[in-house]
Image (tube, rainbow, N blue to C red; front, side, top):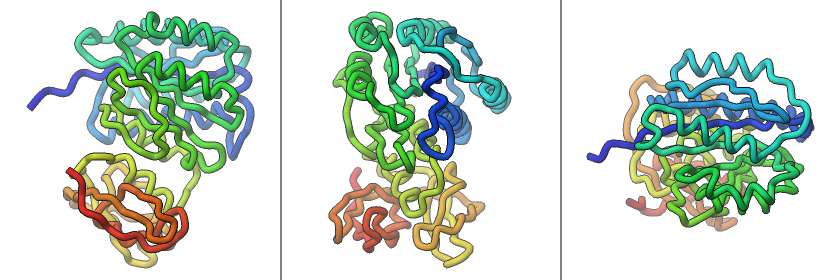
Length: 318
């Protein structure tokens, strides 16, 4: 069995003044920070301990952490440091990427591992077009995953170009629900460029970051289960735990990391069973609105998150 390459991850959070804007229940910056913290927690829950660097940036760069091996203590330190950051000024994307690339290359084993930069931003930069031209040189051998935050998305087309130049994909935390408008998920582009795939998942080792991103928004009922199931695109099996709805009694198989899931029938919180099991993942197709979703086989009775109709189950794809 081939050993998984070491992961060197840089999380960069835009802390410029524009991130103070409130598009939903919190500011863009607060949503980005929550998402970044969820990323670290999701990696820990999966037993992954990559080298991590965290940057908050505006007209000056502040290194919150790293490069450091991810641990519970490191994640807690990052959370405390980010809680004291106050957005101000403007942000230079060029300076940020240069510093992020520097941090990624400093981690132990960086030359042998995979380097990825996850950039939380609202896309408002004065130097964006210039950075796109320089990205292949600045980020040589690395992948960039811009995560668009908020509803002021004037820079989204340029961010698509930037991601393509750096062999990454653009993600989107959404505008209202923070789940419905994902532009893509973290995936292994292999040089093929950016892909707008909605709620489809890539096969990159950062798939658990996508899991965390799906959890950043407010409770979304049935949509919550659909989003999380979608993240297992092309995977025949996944580690799961069984959960029971304490209100209606229905059981579902969900990945053990998703402890905040809700019953898609009545929206009640789901309780976690003690024994984890392995369960297959398959395709579902809504007979009413014809939307297709990846879903865990134990949850095939769940209603379509689009129209509420009962979902049918197709054969698993291996």
